[in-house]
Image: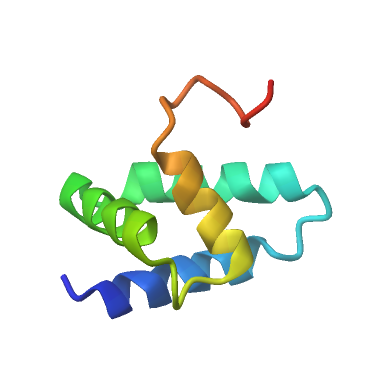
Length: 79
């Protein structure tokens, strides 16, 4: 899939969760949605692209994509 389309989809999901007052809950919601709804190839592609160049991702989407590289039960960094 085109990485621009994946970025747009991630940004749309992030926009939905942006109204969540708790930033960590918003990021967790985005991560959960992507893990449940996206094909593993899509997740690999966006995490690889984000590692190389996160241009095109909103700040909230970027934070969630960065968290996708962590094991599902590891929680936020620093915890």
